Length: 95
Image (cartoon, rainbow, N blue to C red; front, side, top):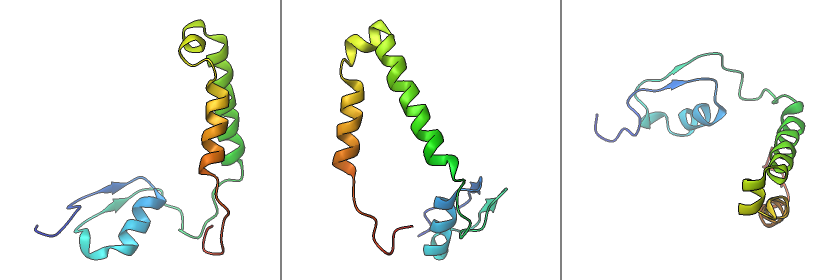
């Protein structure tokens, strides 16, 4: 179908997919979704805490692994620098 970016899609509850459908309804011919939450539903409060804990474990694991530590001797510092470089202030239109 000309002009369609997605001719069929199965969304597994992704907000990105739902937002794409909302913004570009004329670009998708069909889509199926399973186990979706309402777009206004707040994500679990533990997402940030759990994500940070996983990142901390990965950094610590690299420091303990000889090969990883040799290849990435300042991995934790590099991750910190990356987050500082990407940091931005949330505005009124940012959730």
